[in-house]
Image 1: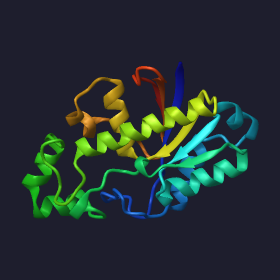
Image 2: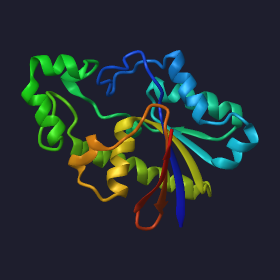
Image 3: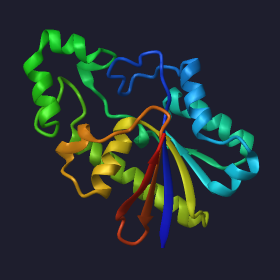
Length: 203
């Protein structure tokens, strides 16, 4: 069976120009607007679009997902595995600040993120394993509830990882993938093989 999963990245946050990672910052007013503009609040349209919703527990995702779920009465499940990758000592710091202190480490990380991990950060291979586990759980929940379509409110790193998987790109290409704030990215998931197909990305 083919399941459609639409991934919505959160909008702008209070720590927008930093590596937020697992830091639990809030959406700004613009961030809310970006997500509102992407998701139609016409209830009949949203209700026919998705059967189920999943969200990262971080406030920049879950606050919007919870409000949408209540408004359009679509079931919502929170999954901690859908959180952004943890950047360790780089959490909440801008890339400009990091480059000023450790330019070589930052450059190595951009070029080969699977080989060069920020100090005390989550490794990308571990992140990939975590997201694959989350995807398996999402598939199982959709099959149990007979859901064919789902909205997943999550983070840029998660979306970029799924794009790498769908396009069969190396994990080292993850930082080259796009995932704009408030953007919706549509995938098809084969429930038997767990193969992903990228359908479209819309701002």
